[in-house]
Image (cartoon, rainbow, N blue to C red):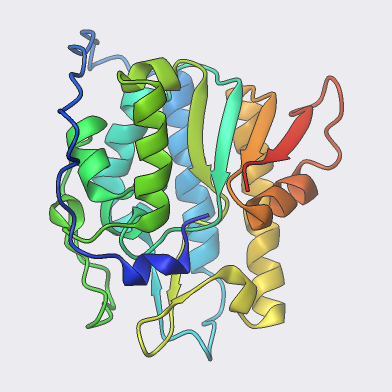
Length: 251
């Protein structure tokens, strides 16, 4: 889950440990897009379009950020680099955090790890309506997302080369939207008006089920109880031989 505690984080500094060498990337034919890669990005686009067509959320929501719109370039680079093959395990977060995916387009996307370890590149635009207390600075963001720094920090410790992790795993958010209150506070989906929240969660559940089927995922790990519950609802009908056999929580 990309946590509200991100708001208390300070300035990002490089880890005190020695930089982890990243193996040179394998050469790829840029003219030949992987079918699953392309389909995955189209599915995400469709989900974002459907979410954007929902009526305005109203109080307590003041601003809604759509990272898969204004941060589409780095998101596509992330998918191209690390999601070109089927995946056994999907780590599932709740929704973007203000200093994570809202900045970089990458789930749990704390900027230092996205830029320096994952080597993701791409331009990030400004959201159409930007909260003055939550500016989007893209990959140059210097604020640390608590959940992102913890998640990718752990993965980096276990797999110094990110390609080792992404060989069988991928990372995804249940909801692609960030919600902010007028104060700039990050609003989790649980705080949305009930009727609109239910419509939004229904769309996101359907999108998650399609993603799991597309990638051939056998295990979904909910990063937090909320993600675990939504995965259970979305994939509840998938038993042995279905889209996904297991849903677990890391929280």
